[in-house]
Structures are given as C-alpha cells and as structure tokens.
Amino acid sequence: MEAGGLLTRRRNPANRRVHLVELTPAGEDLFQRLAAAAVAHDRQLRAGLTDHDLARLEQLLDQMRANLTS
Image (cartoon, rainbow, N blue to C red; front, top):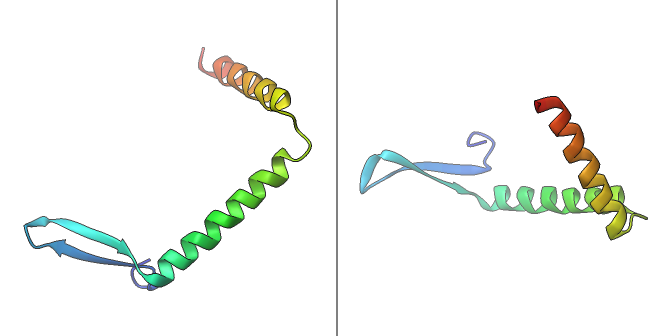
C-alpha cells in the first residue's frame, strides 16, 4: 500500500520503535469510495427486509454459530 501511494509510514521521532502510518490523499479517496460501495451493497442486501426480518435473521445466524461452537 505504501508503494502504491495509498499510505505513508515513518518512524515516530519520540520513539524510533514506533511507526506512524497515515493515509495519503489517494488512500483517503480510495477508502471513501470503498466505504460508499460497502454501504450500497449493504442497502442492496437488506432491501425489502423489515426490522423484524433482520432481527429474526440475526437470531437464526446466532443459532447457527452456536451450533458450530457447541
């Protein structure tokens, strides 16, 4: 990601063992585009489902997870 220009990495002058990592403007732009795509995908997945439907789905998925871990 650093080589791709999406982030910068430098040592912390106060503690040379620590790296400071920051998004570049290009990295921030990519992050914003990916976040918007994730939100749009989530809206598409939930289209037509009521709050009750989503609560029931969560219960069913919790039960399926419990079935795998017990």
